[in-house]
Length: 475
Image 1 (tube, rainbow, N blue to C red):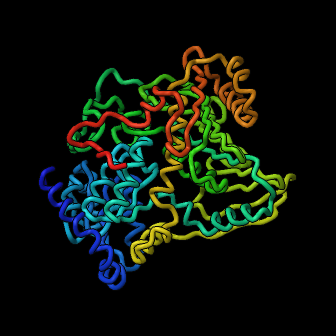
Image 2 (cartoon, rainbow, N blue to C red; image 1 turned 180 degrees about the horizontal axis):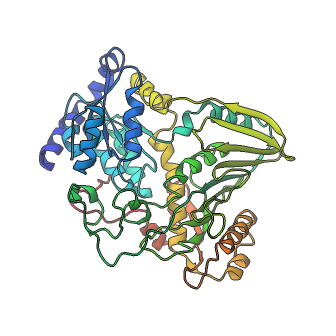
Image 3 (cartoon, rainbow, N blue to C red; image 1 turned 180 degrees about the vertical axis):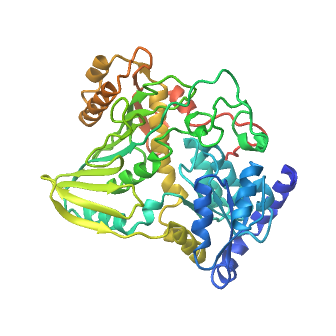
């Protein structure tokens, strides 16, 4: 296995040659030869990356990476592609042009920096970062080493949604009054463990934890359920919800984070080992129009399997305009429709495209402008999710009546919270057992992406890193 010292030495050499490769690469692999990709993280979304890249003409997936030897073996058997546990081994190879990262959130930043240092382009799943500070370092690394980075927010490559965004911005429905993202997705209790859980014998746990603390897991399901713990995940607002957060901001045309953020919610309806909220209503109070986001992990009512819906959506985006609503379902990101105030269909938008192909187009042209959603673009949407979580994490348990009184000045948030409380009542949620939290209002400097006069909030913009897996300060 490549050592850290060898990797850094190799990366330095690769970085020194980056300027030359940026001039010549488009004439070698980019224009006339195959683009060779390695994919890291092979559970769930990672398999989608392998499948998606393999069908793009002129692309070869030449290597795989996963810290779980059982997962790696299954992928090797399925695809006939060799693999390793440590991504640094692949980054040291000269026959790999780019990497696709579908690893857990806490690894995205460091792996993007490493890949940039090694002269590789990067496709990284959402959220691009585990915290706000990491996003800045990723952007700086890609710029410093002249690499291209695209985020896995595939809705940005949808012709249907792109057309709908342009139609709204052209003023066809008047001004936007609010842009609303929805993530109503079933998230049952993780259950309560009696103590630290056994680590699968096939997992290299030091590599799995990487930048996060090396502590035994407190979850029965090792894979995937890391999303619901602060050390490794960001809850559903940064998981499924990041797709919808990004689309909601895209319609607004906002290029930065909002100056004011306030969240309401909690981990409600059950007591388990999970940490992140399963229920959230948050307002990002932009000057022109607010961005509202709603997360619900409980069903429509106690004992039901179906989830709630809003304008017929359980997951998606509703853009409220003076002349009606734009409804964007999450299913395959291939459609959107405009309906007037009476619900009558005014216009329909249809069409899908490969986001993976867009990444390859960018690699061939060597133009970041050809990428539909760069890491820098996706960083803003990721930061919205992070600020949402920070508000809630710094909040306090508040009785429902008192909470509603305190947020009544935020009409859009009050409306969302009112519906959320009805939803929680239908699930017989006892706030004495699982408290409802009123988040801390955040005043944010959009340019600096820091909270004004709030050091507790700013402390959550980054984290302590575990040596030797330390994200370097580049920005």
